[in-house]
Image (cartoon, rainbow, N blue to C red):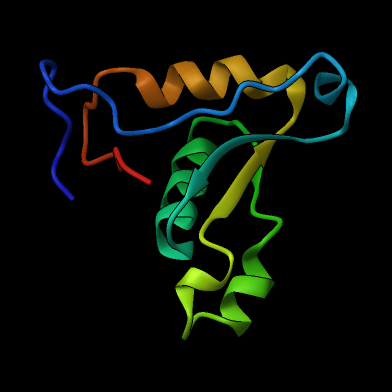
Length: 101
């Protein structure tokens, strides 16, 4: 993947959690098309000290032959980390940080 240029808009589509969802243990930050994309973003968040979780990981590993079955892989974070994770992923890329899901 190539680094995001400053003029290129982000391709990440962040979720907008409701107030009720923000009271839960985990909220969905982003939905990715593939497990590999989700795993790369989780690794980037982890490197920034933001714990992230892929609840669909094992399901997608089992049905990886048919990606269209569910259509997406969720990345979840703690509600308290939601804004920090979003800001981190939207920041101008200083490296080859993934910029699409």
